Image (cartoon, rainbow, N blue to C red; front, side, top):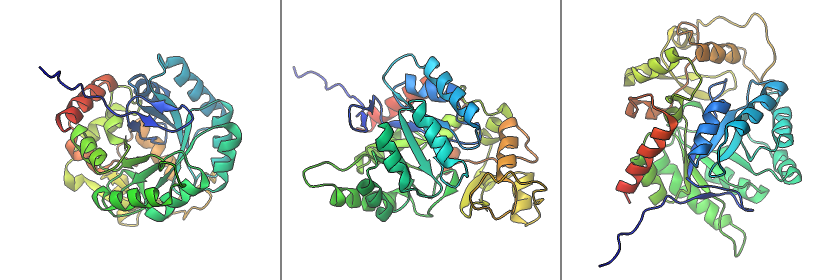
Length: 334
């Protein structure tokens, strides 16, 4: 009798011997939503755990990376950081991450050419978050270790209105066509609107090498965002999800709150003091203050980012249980 084939998730290989056992990346949600505790829990399950570095001081980032390392129990997964290129302290945060020996750096909300050379100097893989075939191919040419393709269904800042179903085949082809002769294309990580293992299986079949999930891990026990934040998301309806214009100049998806209503009516209070946290800021409101308030649970004045996948997530679970469920669902669809 033929033995039953044992299903195994494909590993996510960033080259030079660096890989995660499972092809699942936890989104790097700022401000202080994706912290060391969450990143380590994901890495311990074989995924790529991410610390949201934007908005942290040098000392805070060093402390978070060291704490994540101390909580990491095995080498099945990786610990990375996510940094907004739009942040004024982007270069400092990248430098500190490399000095601390971070496994991998993800960056988005803009594009940097210089960071790839810095990554090579420190032997640190660099993974940009892109939303077009052109930028994906350029990233591969510049030396990216992978790209995250983020669709218009993601939470937070959005680079496109297009869905993954529309974008993924185009970006897959662009990477394959632009790969150096005789070499495989760099990994393509699909992101935006992915809630469960059924979604993961679908996009792996379409040509993705892995997926990134933010909202699913925000709604975990290990995420240190306030319970009010999490309960607000779990109870949300489709009509509660809106898009606002961020001071960085990009649209962003968020939950309706007293603050977002004011933003949509152009009645949000202008900043009385500016810490110049962004390279370019419209001054329409202080996004740093609003995100900090959301993390602490201020439902009146906070800005609560969420992905479109929120509508398919109904429980706050331990990270370990999330991985178990994802693996079962993926297996059922292969």
